[in-house]
Length: 478
Ligand code: NAD
Ligand code: 6OD
Image (cartoon, rainbow, N blue to C red; front, side, top):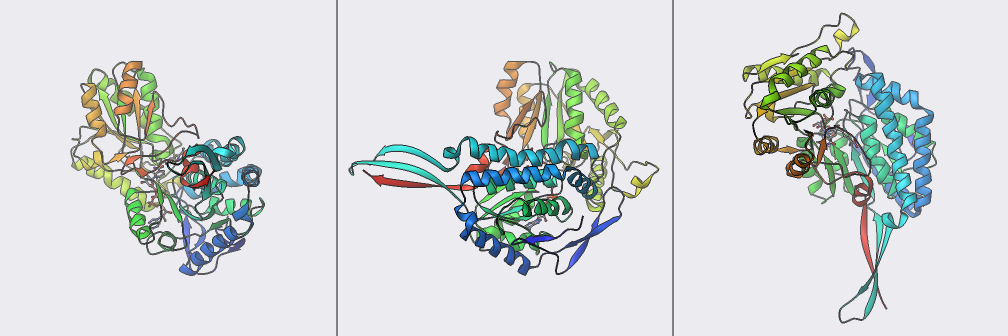
Protein backbone atom coordinates (compact mmCIF):
# COMPACT_ATOMS: atom_id res chain seq x y z
CA UNK A 1 0.00 0.00 0.00
CA UNK A 2 1.52 3.32 -1.12
CA UNK A 3 0.65 6.15 1.28
CA UNK A 4 -0.67 9.24 -0.52
CA UNK A 5 -2.37 12.50 0.41
CA UNK A 6 -5.92 12.97 -0.87
CA UNK A 7 -6.72 16.64 -1.41
CA UNK A 8 -9.75 18.03 -3.21
CA UNK A 9 -10.40 14.68 -4.87
CA UNK A 10 -6.81 14.23 -6.10
CA UNK A 11 -4.20 11.76 -4.82
CA UNK A 12 -0.73 13.21 -4.53
CA UNK A 13 2.59 12.44 -2.85
CA UNK A 14 4.72 15.44 -3.75
CA UNK A 15 7.32 16.83 -1.38
CA UNK A 16 9.52 15.16 1.23
CA UNK A 17 8.91 11.66 2.55
CA UNK A 18 9.95 9.39 5.41
CA UNK A 19 10.29 5.60 5.77
CA UNK A 20 7.50 3.40 7.14
CA UNK A 21 8.85 0.64 9.39
CA UNK A 22 7.09 -2.67 10.08
CA UNK A 23 6.96 -3.20 13.86
CA UNK A 24 6.62 -6.97 13.42
CA UNK A 25 10.17 -7.39 12.12
CA UNK A 26 11.73 -3.93 11.70
CA UNK A 27 11.74 -4.09 7.88
CA UNK A 28 10.95 -1.07 5.68
CA UNK A 29 7.43 -1.21 4.24
CA UNK A 30 7.69 1.85 2.01
CA UNK A 31 7.74 5.61 2.30
CA UNK A 32 5.17 8.16 3.47
CA UNK A 33 4.83 11.68 2.04
CA UNK A 34 5.24 14.45 4.62
CA UNK A 35 2.62 17.16 4.07
CA UNK A 36 4.13 20.62 3.86
CA UNK A 37 2.27 23.72 5.00
CA UNK A 38 1.21 24.18 1.36
CA UNK A 39 -0.38 20.70 1.17
CA UNK A 40 -2.25 21.37 4.43
CA UNK A 41 -3.42 24.76 3.08
CA UNK A 42 -4.64 23.05 -0.09
CA UNK A 43 -6.56 20.49 1.96
CA UNK A 44 -8.29 23.14 4.09
CA UNK A 45 -9.10 25.20 0.99
CA UNK A 46 -10.54 22.12 -0.75
CA UNK A 47 -12.69 21.42 2.32
CA UNK A 48 -13.97 25.01 2.36
CA UNK A 49 -14.79 24.74 -1.33
CA UNK A 50 -16.78 21.55 -0.73
CA UNK A 51 -18.81 23.34 1.94
CA UNK A 52 -19.61 26.18 -0.47
CA UNK A 53 -20.65 23.61 -3.07
CA UNK A 54 -23.07 20.69 -3.09
CA UNK A 55 -21.79 19.16 0.17
CA UNK A 56 -22.77 22.33 2.01
CA UNK A 57 -26.39 21.99 0.97
CA UNK A 58 -26.60 18.19 1.14
CA UNK A 59 -29.52 16.67 3.04
CA UNK A 60 -29.45 13.98 5.68
CA UNK A 61 -30.62 11.23 3.32
CA UNK A 62 -27.88 12.05 0.85
CA UNK A 63 -25.27 11.99 3.58
CA UNK A 64 -26.62 8.78 5.06
CA UNK A 65 -26.41 7.19 1.61
CA UNK A 66 -22.81 8.40 1.30
CA UNK A 67 -21.92 6.86 4.68
CA UNK A 68 -23.50 3.56 3.63
CA UNK A 69 -21.54 3.63 0.38
CA UNK A 70 -18.31 4.08 2.35
CA UNK A 71 -19.24 1.18 4.65
CA UNK A 72 -19.96 -1.01 1.61
CA UNK A 73 -16.68 0.11 0.03
CA UNK A 74 -14.69 -0.95 3.10
CA UNK A 75 -16.56 -4.26 3.17
CA UNK A 76 -15.71 -4.84 -0.50
CA UNK A 77 -11.98 -4.35 0.24
CA UNK A 78 -12.08 -6.04 3.65
CA UNK A 79 -8.93 -8.14 3.18
CA UNK A 80 -6.90 -5.20 1.86
CA UNK A 81 -7.80 -3.21 4.98
CA UNK A 82 -6.82 -6.17 7.17
CA UNK A 83 -3.48 -6.58 5.35
CA UNK A 84 -2.69 -2.85 5.62
CA UNK A 85 -3.53 -2.63 9.34
CA UNK A 86 -1.53 -5.79 10.11
CA UNK A 87 1.49 -4.53 8.15
CA UNK A 88 1.53 -1.07 9.77
CA UNK A 89 0.95 -2.24 13.35
CA UNK A 90 2.15 -5.86 13.52
CA UNK A 91 -1.08 -6.75 15.36
CA UNK A 92 -2.46 -10.30 15.14
CA UNK A 93 -4.46 -10.76 11.93
CA UNK A 94 -7.42 -12.01 13.93
CA UNK A 95 -7.60 -8.66 15.77
CA UNK A 96 -7.76 -6.68 12.52
CA UNK A 97 -10.31 -9.14 11.10
CA UNK A 98 -12.63 -9.12 14.10
CA UNK A 99 -12.12 -5.65 15.60
CA UNK A 100 -10.55 -2.98 13.40
CA UNK A 101 -12.22 -3.48 10.06
CA UNK A 102 -15.71 -4.54 11.27
CA UNK A 103 -15.78 -1.55 13.64
CA UNK A 104 -14.82 0.83 10.82
CA UNK A 105 -17.74 -0.51 8.79
CA UNK A 106 -19.93 -0.32 11.91
CA UNK A 107 -18.92 3.28 12.56
CA UNK A 108 -20.20 4.40 9.14
CA UNK A 109 -23.36 2.26 9.37
CA UNK A 110 -24.15 3.47 12.91
CA UNK A 111 -24.15 7.13 11.89
CA UNK A 112 -26.08 6.43 8.68
CA UNK A 113 -28.70 4.71 10.87
CA UNK A 114 -28.80 7.66 13.26
CA UNK A 115 -29.46 10.06 10.40
CA UNK A 116 -32.20 7.90 8.88
CA UNK A 117 -33.73 7.00 12.20
CA UNK A 118 -34.03 10.42 13.77
CA UNK A 119 -33.27 13.17 11.28
CA UNK A 120 -35.24 15.67 13.33
CA UNK A 121 -33.03 14.98 16.39
CA UNK A 122 -29.86 15.48 14.44
CA UNK A 123 -30.97 18.64 12.71
CA UNK A 124 -34.05 20.26 14.15
CA UNK A 125 -36.11 20.21 17.29
CA UNK A 126 -39.30 22.20 17.72
CA UNK A 127 -40.15 23.98 20.96
CA UNK A 128 -43.34 26.07 21.03
CA UNK A 129 -42.47 28.96 23.30
CA UNK A 130 -43.65 32.18 24.82
CA UNK A 131 -41.55 35.32 24.78
CA UNK A 132 -42.29 37.56 27.80
CA UNK A 133 -43.79 40.90 26.83
CA UNK A 134 -43.64 40.21 23.12
CA UNK A 135 -46.50 37.82 22.60
CA UNK A 136 -46.17 34.24 21.50
CA UNK A 137 -43.25 32.92 19.56
CA UNK A 138 -42.28 29.67 17.95
CA UNK A 139 -38.74 28.66 18.70
CA UNK A 140 -37.01 25.88 16.91
CA UNK A 141 -33.47 24.64 16.76
CA UNK A 142 -31.55 23.97 13.60
CA UNK A 143 -28.37 21.94 13.78
CA UNK A 144 -25.72 23.36 11.50
CA UNK A 145 -22.35 21.74 10.64
CA UNK A 146 -19.28 23.36 12.20
CA UNK A 147 -17.45 23.67 8.89
CA UNK A 148 -13.95 22.31 8.30
CA UNK A 149 -13.08 19.68 10.90
CA UNK A 150 -9.49 18.59 11.52
CA UNK A 151 -9.23 15.00 12.72
CA UNK A 152 -5.94 13.91 14.26
CA UNK A 153 -5.70 10.21 15.06
CA UNK A 154 -3.21 7.91 16.82
CA UNK A 155 -1.46 4.69 15.76
CA UNK A 156 -2.98 2.20 18.17
CA UNK A 157 -6.37 1.66 16.45
CA UNK A 158 -5.73 3.61 13.25
CA UNK A 159 -8.81 2.76 11.19
CA UNK A 160 -11.22 2.24 14.08
CA UNK A 161 -10.44 5.56 15.75
CA UNK A 162 -10.24 7.73 12.64
CA UNK A 163 -13.56 6.42 11.25
CA UNK A 164 -15.11 6.85 14.71
CA UNK A 165 -14.71 10.62 14.11
CA UNK A 166 -14.95 10.82 10.31
CA UNK A 167 -18.37 9.15 10.17
CA UNK A 168 -20.20 11.52 12.56
CA UNK A 169 -18.33 14.56 11.19
CA UNK A 170 -19.53 13.77 7.66
CA UNK A 171 -22.97 12.76 8.95
CA UNK A 172 -23.41 16.29 10.26
CA UNK A 173 -22.37 17.81 6.94
CA UNK A 174 -18.85 18.96 7.84
CA UNK A 175 -15.87 18.70 5.51
CA UNK A 176 -12.98 16.71 6.97
CA UNK A 177 -9.21 16.94 6.86
CA UNK A 178 -7.71 13.80 8.43
CA UNK A 179 -4.12 13.55 9.62
CA UNK A 180 -3.50 9.99 10.76
CA UNK A 181 -0.48 8.96 12.80
CA UNK A 182 2.80 9.01 10.89
CA UNK A 183 3.33 5.43 12.12
CA UNK A 184 0.13 4.05 10.49
CA UNK A 185 -0.73 5.78 7.20
CA UNK A 186 -1.93 2.81 5.14
CA UNK A 187 -5.57 2.18 6.09
CA UNK A 188 -6.21 5.94 5.91
CA UNK A 189 -4.96 5.94 2.32
CA UNK A 190 -7.13 2.94 1.53
CA UNK A 191 -10.10 4.70 3.14
CA UNK A 192 -9.48 7.72 0.88
CA UNK A 193 -9.61 5.36 -2.12
CA UNK A 194 -12.95 4.00 -0.87
CA UNK A 195 -14.34 7.48 -0.25
CA UNK A 196 -13.17 8.59 -3.71
CA UNK A 197 -15.41 5.87 -5.15
CA UNK A 198 -18.36 6.46 -2.83
CA UNK A 199 -19.85 9.53 -4.49
CA UNK A 200 -18.87 12.23 -1.98
CA UNK A 201 -18.08 15.55 -3.65
CA UNK A 202 -14.39 16.42 -3.98
CA UNK A 203 -13.05 18.08 -0.85
CA UNK A 204 -15.67 16.68 1.54
CA UNK A 205 -12.94 14.32 2.79
CA UNK A 206 -9.24 15.12 2.60
CA UNK A 207 -6.20 13.27 3.91
CA UNK A 208 -2.76 14.63 4.71
CA UNK A 209 0.09 12.54 6.10
CA UNK A 210 2.97 13.57 8.27
CA UNK A 211 4.28 14.16 11.75
CA UNK A 212 2.76 16.24 14.55
CA UNK A 213 5.00 18.90 16.13
CA UNK A 214 6.28 21.60 13.72
CA UNK A 215 4.73 19.54 10.91
CA UNK A 216 1.40 18.58 9.33
CA UNK A 217 -0.39 18.08 12.67
CA UNK A 218 0.60 21.50 13.97
CA UNK A 219 -0.01 23.23 10.61
CA UNK A 220 -3.52 21.77 10.55
CA UNK A 221 -4.57 22.38 14.16
CA UNK A 222 -3.31 25.97 14.07
CA UNK A 223 -4.88 26.70 10.69
CA UNK A 224 -7.28 29.66 10.71
CA UNK A 225 -9.54 27.86 8.23
CA UNK A 226 -10.17 24.95 10.60
CA UNK A 227 -13.45 25.31 12.51
CA UNK A 228 -13.09 22.38 14.96
CA UNK A 229 -10.53 19.81 16.04
CA UNK A 230 -11.26 16.22 17.02
CA UNK A 231 -8.18 14.57 18.47
CA UNK A 232 -7.27 11.21 19.97
CA UNK A 233 -3.82 10.71 21.44
CA UNK A 234 -1.62 11.49 24.41
CA UNK A 235 -2.70 14.03 27.01
CA UNK A 236 0.49 16.07 26.49
CA UNK A 237 -0.25 16.26 22.76
CA UNK A 238 -3.79 17.39 23.58
CA UNK A 239 -2.35 20.21 25.66
CA UNK A 240 -0.03 21.24 22.78
CA UNK A 241 -2.95 21.20 20.33
CA UNK A 242 -5.06 23.29 22.71
CA UNK A 243 -2.32 25.91 22.93
CA UNK A 244 -2.01 25.93 19.14
CA UNK A 245 -5.79 26.18 18.66
CA UNK A 246 -6.19 28.93 21.28
CA UNK A 247 -5.36 31.79 18.90
CA UNK A 248 -8.41 30.97 16.78
CA UNK A 249 -10.57 29.77 19.71
CA UNK A 250 -11.12 26.54 17.77
CA UNK A 251 -13.42 24.12 19.62
CA UNK A 252 -11.88 20.77 20.55
CA UNK A 253 -13.04 17.24 21.30
CA UNK A 254 -10.29 15.27 23.00
CA UNK A 255 -9.86 11.56 23.76
CA UNK A 256 -6.60 11.33 25.68
CA UNK A 257 -4.48 9.02 27.79
CA UNK A 258 -5.35 6.85 30.78
CA UNK A 259 -3.98 4.90 33.72
CA UNK A 260 -7.03 2.75 34.10
CA UNK A 261 -7.85 0.99 37.39
CA UNK A 262 -9.56 -2.34 37.96
CA UNK A 263 -11.13 -3.09 41.36
CA UNK A 264 -11.45 -6.79 42.18
CA UNK A 265 -13.59 -7.44 45.24
CA UNK A 266 -13.33 -10.65 47.26
CA UNK A 267 -16.90 -11.59 46.28
CA UNK A 268 -16.02 -11.55 42.56
CA UNK A 269 -16.15 -14.58 40.29
CA UNK A 270 -12.38 -15.10 40.41
CA UNK A 271 -12.15 -17.00 37.11
CA UNK A 272 -14.01 -14.19 35.34
CA UNK A 273 -11.93 -11.51 37.06
CA UNK A 274 -8.64 -13.17 36.08
CA UNK A 275 -9.84 -13.78 32.50
CA UNK A 276 -11.14 -10.22 32.27
CA UNK A 277 -7.90 -8.74 33.59
CA UNK A 278 -5.83 -10.78 31.13
CA UNK A 279 -7.97 -9.23 28.38
CA UNK A 280 -8.05 -5.73 29.82
CA UNK A 281 -4.30 -5.53 30.49
CA UNK A 282 -2.84 -7.46 27.56
CA UNK A 283 -5.17 -7.09 24.55
CA UNK A 284 -3.23 -5.55 21.65
CA UNK A 285 -0.17 -5.76 23.93
CA UNK A 286 -1.66 -3.11 26.20
CA UNK A 287 -1.76 -0.52 23.42
CA UNK A 288 -5.42 0.40 23.87
CA UNK A 289 -6.24 3.53 25.84
CA UNK A 290 -8.82 1.51 27.81
CA UNK A 291 -6.32 -1.12 29.01
CA UNK A 292 -5.94 -1.70 32.73
CA UNK A 293 -2.55 -0.72 34.17
CA UNK A 294 -3.54 -0.59 37.87
CA UNK A 295 -5.27 -3.57 39.50
CA UNK A 296 -6.49 -3.31 43.09
CA UNK A 297 -7.51 -6.62 44.68
CA UNK A 298 -9.26 -7.13 48.02
CA UNK A 299 -6.74 -8.68 50.42
CA UNK A 300 -8.37 -12.13 51.03
CA UNK A 301 -7.96 -13.04 47.34
CA UNK A 302 -4.87 -10.96 46.56
CA UNK A 303 -2.25 -13.76 46.64
CA UNK A 304 -4.29 -16.19 44.57
CA UNK A 305 -5.20 -13.49 42.06
CA UNK A 306 -1.55 -12.48 41.59
CA UNK A 307 -0.38 -16.08 41.10
CA UNK A 308 -3.12 -16.79 38.56
CA UNK A 309 -2.65 -13.54 36.65
CA UNK A 310 1.12 -14.09 36.56
CA UNK A 311 0.70 -17.63 35.20
CA UNK A 312 -1.69 -16.45 32.52
CA UNK A 313 0.59 -13.55 31.49
CA UNK A 314 3.61 -15.86 31.24
CA UNK A 315 1.62 -18.28 29.05
CA UNK A 316 0.50 -15.66 26.52
CA UNK A 317 1.78 -16.10 22.98
CA UNK A 318 0.86 -14.83 19.53
CA UNK A 319 0.85 -11.26 20.80
CA UNK A 320 1.91 -8.34 18.62
CA UNK A 321 4.80 -5.89 18.98
CA UNK A 322 5.01 -2.34 20.25
CA UNK A 323 4.36 0.11 17.43
CA UNK A 324 7.98 1.25 17.09
CA UNK A 325 11.48 0.81 18.43
CA UNK A 326 11.05 4.10 20.32
CA UNK A 327 7.84 2.91 21.98
CA UNK A 328 9.40 -0.47 22.84
CA UNK A 329 12.28 1.40 24.48
CA UNK A 330 9.82 3.57 26.42
CA UNK A 331 7.94 0.52 27.73
CA UNK A 332 11.21 -1.25 28.63
CA UNK A 333 12.39 1.88 30.41
CA UNK A 334 9.29 1.62 32.64
CA UNK A 335 10.10 -2.06 33.34
CA UNK A 336 13.56 -0.87 34.49
CA UNK A 337 12.15 2.06 36.48
CA UNK A 338 9.68 -0.28 38.20
CA UNK A 339 12.52 -2.57 39.28
CA UNK A 340 14.52 0.43 40.53
CA UNK A 341 11.45 1.57 42.45
CA UNK A 342 11.36 -1.81 44.20
CA UNK A 343 8.80 -3.80 42.19
CA UNK A 344 8.49 -7.56 42.35
CA UNK A 345 8.29 -8.82 38.78
CA UNK A 346 5.72 -11.64 38.90
CA UNK A 347 5.77 -12.27 35.15
CA UNK A 348 7.65 -10.96 32.11
CA UNK A 349 9.70 -7.83 32.53
CA UNK A 350 11.87 -8.15 29.45
CA UNK A 351 12.10 -8.89 25.74
CA UNK A 352 10.88 -12.28 24.47
CA UNK A 353 13.12 -14.50 22.33
CA UNK A 354 11.07 -16.24 19.64
CA UNK A 355 13.91 -17.64 17.55
CA UNK A 356 12.36 -16.33 14.32
CA UNK A 357 11.93 -13.05 12.36
CA UNK A 358 9.96 -11.52 15.25
CA UNK A 359 13.25 -11.14 17.11
CA UNK A 360 14.06 -8.12 14.92
CA UNK A 361 10.62 -6.66 15.69
CA UNK A 362 9.58 -4.56 18.68
CA UNK A 363 8.06 -7.09 21.10
CA UNK A 364 8.10 -6.88 24.90
CA UNK A 365 6.91 -9.47 27.40
CA UNK A 366 3.49 -9.25 29.06
CA UNK A 367 4.40 -8.15 32.56
CA UNK A 368 2.80 -8.30 36.01
CA UNK A 369 4.28 -6.21 38.83
CA UNK A 370 3.54 -5.98 42.54
CA UNK A 371 5.00 -4.26 45.59
CA UNK A 372 5.21 -0.65 44.41
CA UNK A 373 4.02 2.34 46.44
CA UNK A 374 1.25 4.42 44.86
CA UNK A 375 3.78 7.21 44.34
CA UNK A 376 5.93 5.09 42.02
CA UNK A 377 6.23 6.36 38.44
CA UNK A 378 5.26 2.93 37.09
CA UNK A 379 1.97 3.22 39.04
CA UNK A 380 1.19 6.85 38.19
CA UNK A 381 2.29 7.31 34.57
CA UNK A 382 0.69 5.85 31.46
CA UNK A 383 3.03 3.18 30.04
CA UNK A 384 0.82 2.02 27.12
CA UNK A 385 2.30 -1.48 27.04
CA UNK A 386 1.39 -4.99 28.22
CA UNK A 387 1.89 -4.32 31.91
CA UNK A 388 -0.11 -3.93 35.09
CA UNK A 389 0.71 -3.38 38.74
CA UNK A 390 -1.37 -5.30 41.29
CA UNK A 391 -1.89 -3.95 44.84
CA UNK A 392 -4.09 -5.07 47.74
CA UNK A 393 -6.88 -3.11 49.48
CA UNK A 394 -8.96 -3.72 52.59
CA UNK A 395 -12.13 -1.63 52.29
CA UNK A 396 -14.43 -0.28 49.60
CA UNK A 397 -13.53 3.30 50.50
CA UNK A 398 -9.82 2.53 50.27
CA UNK A 399 -10.35 0.88 46.88
CA UNK A 400 -12.13 3.99 45.62
CA UNK A 401 -9.46 6.31 47.01
CA UNK A 402 -6.73 4.29 45.27
CA UNK A 403 -8.62 4.16 41.97
CA UNK A 404 -9.33 7.90 42.04
CA UNK A 405 -5.82 8.99 43.03
CA UNK A 406 -4.75 9.60 39.44
CA UNK A 407 -4.45 12.55 37.09
CA UNK A 408 -6.30 10.40 34.52
CA UNK A 409 -9.93 9.27 34.40
CA UNK A 410 -10.73 7.30 31.27
CA UNK A 411 -12.09 3.81 32.07
CA UNK A 412 -12.37 1.47 35.04
CA UNK A 413 -13.45 -2.09 35.63
CA UNK A 414 -15.23 -3.47 38.71
CA UNK A 415 -15.33 -7.18 39.51
CA UNK A 416 -17.98 -8.10 42.09
CA UNK A 417 -21.01 -10.40 42.44
CA UNK A 418 -22.69 -7.90 44.77
CA UNK A 419 -25.12 -5.85 42.69
CA UNK A 420 -25.60 -3.26 45.41
CA UNK A 421 -21.87 -2.75 45.65
CA UNK A 422 -21.61 -2.36 41.87
CA UNK A 423 -24.29 0.35 41.85
CA UNK A 424 -22.80 2.03 44.90
CA UNK A 425 -19.20 2.06 43.68
CA UNK A 426 -19.63 2.71 39.92
CA UNK A 427 -20.78 6.35 40.16
CA UNK A 428 -18.00 7.13 42.64
CA UNK A 429 -15.16 6.02 40.36
CA UNK A 430 -13.75 9.10 38.66
CA UNK A 431 -13.67 7.73 35.11
CA UNK A 432 -15.86 8.41 32.09
CA UNK A 433 -16.57 4.70 31.59
CA UNK A 434 -17.13 2.08 34.31
CA UNK A 435 -17.37 -1.54 33.20
CA UNK A 436 -18.85 -4.00 35.71
CA UNK A 437 -17.78 -7.66 35.30
CA UNK A 438 -16.68 -6.97 31.74
CA UNK A 439 -14.23 -4.85 29.77
CA UNK A 440 -14.53 -2.92 26.52
CA UNK A 441 -18.08 -4.07 25.91
CA UNK A 442 -19.16 -1.40 23.45
CA UNK A 443 -22.49 0.03 22.34
CA UNK A 444 -21.77 2.78 19.83
CA UNK A 445 -24.63 4.95 21.15
CA UNK A 446 -23.28 5.31 24.70
CA UNK A 447 -21.16 8.29 25.83
CA UNK A 448 -17.47 7.47 25.35
CA UNK A 449 -14.71 9.59 26.84
CA UNK A 450 -12.66 10.49 29.85
CA UNK A 451 -12.56 12.94 32.76
CA UNK A 452 -9.56 14.83 34.20
CA UNK A 453 -6.50 14.53 31.92
CA UNK A 454 -8.21 11.82 29.87
CA UNK A 455 -10.24 14.10 27.68
CA UNK A 456 -12.73 16.81 26.88
CA UNK A 457 -16.23 15.93 25.70
CA UNK A 458 -17.88 12.68 24.76
CA UNK A 459 -18.08 10.65 21.58
CA UNK A 460 -20.67 8.09 20.51
CA UNK A 461 -24.16 8.26 19.04
CA UNK A 462 -25.80 11.60 19.59
CA UNK A 463 -22.89 12.85 21.71
CA UNK A 464 -20.75 12.94 18.57
CA UNK A 465 -23.56 14.53 16.54
CA UNK A 466 -23.78 17.20 19.23
CA UNK A 467 -20.07 18.00 18.97
CA UNK A 468 -19.93 18.01 15.19
CA UNK A 469 -22.92 20.35 14.78
CA UNK A 470 -23.97 23.65 16.26
CA UNK A 471 -27.49 24.32 17.58
CA UNK A 472 -28.93 27.50 16.09
CA UNK A 473 -32.05 28.99 17.63
CA UNK A 474 -34.63 30.34 15.19
CA UNK A 475 -37.29 32.46 16.93
CA UNK A 476 -40.42 33.53 14.99
CA UNK A 477 -42.82 35.96 16.60
CA UNK A 478 -46.42 34.95 16.14
P1 NAD B 1 0.27 11.05 20.10
O1 NAD B 1 -0.38 12.07 20.93
O2 NAD B 1 1.73 10.93 20.12
O3 NAD B 1 -0.11 11.23 18.56
C1 NAD B 1 -1.45 11.26 18.13
C2 NAD B 1 -1.56 12.08 16.87
O4 NAD B 1 -1.23 13.42 17.17
C3 NAD B 1 -0.62 11.64 15.75
O5 NAD B 1 -1.29 11.75 14.52
C4 NAD B 1 0.50 12.67 15.85
O6 NAD B 1 1.19 12.87 14.63
C5 NAD B 1 -0.28 13.91 16.24
N1 NAD B 1 0.49 14.95 16.91
C6 NAD B 1 1.55 14.80 17.74
N2 NAD B 1 1.97 16.01 18.19
C7 NAD B 1 1.16 16.94 17.62
C8 NAD B 1 1.09 18.36 17.68
N3 NAD B 1 1.92 19.07 18.42
N4 NAD B 1 0.12 18.99 16.96
C9 NAD B 1 -0.75 18.28 16.21
N5 NAD B 1 -0.71 16.93 16.10
C10 NAD B 1 0.22 16.27 16.80
O7 NAD B 1 -0.43 9.67 20.50
P2 NAD B 1 -0.05 8.21 19.99
O8 NAD B 1 1.27 7.85 20.56
O9 NAD B 1 -0.29 8.13 18.53
O10 NAD B 1 -1.21 7.35 20.70
C11 NAD B 1 -1.10 6.82 21.98
C12 NAD B 1 -1.78 7.73 22.97
O11 NAD B 1 -3.11 7.96 22.58
C13 NAD B 1 -1.87 7.15 24.38
O12 NAD B 1 -1.64 8.17 25.30
C14 NAD B 1 -3.31 6.68 24.47
O13 NAD B 1 -3.81 6.59 25.77
C15 NAD B 1 -4.00 7.73 23.68
N6 NAD B 1 -5.28 7.22 23.16
C16 NAD B 1 -6.43 7.65 23.74
C17 NAD B 1 -7.66 7.16 23.29
C18 NAD B 1 -8.97 7.58 23.90
O14 NAD B 1 -10.02 7.25 23.33
N7 NAD B 1 -8.98 8.27 25.01
C19 NAD B 1 -7.69 6.26 22.23
C20 NAD B 1 -6.47 5.86 21.67
C21 NAD B 1 -5.27 6.36 22.13
O1 6OD C 1 -14.43 1.77 21.05
C1 6OD C 1 -14.31 2.97 20.80
O2 6OD C 1 -15.21 3.64 20.29
C2 6OD C 1 -13.06 3.67 21.12
N1 6OD C 1 -13.05 4.99 20.89
C3 6OD C 1 -12.00 3.00 21.61
C4 6OD C 1 -10.79 3.62 21.99
C5 6OD C 1 -9.74 2.86 22.32
C6 6OD C 1 -8.49 3.43 22.68
O3 6OD C 1 -7.42 2.99 22.33
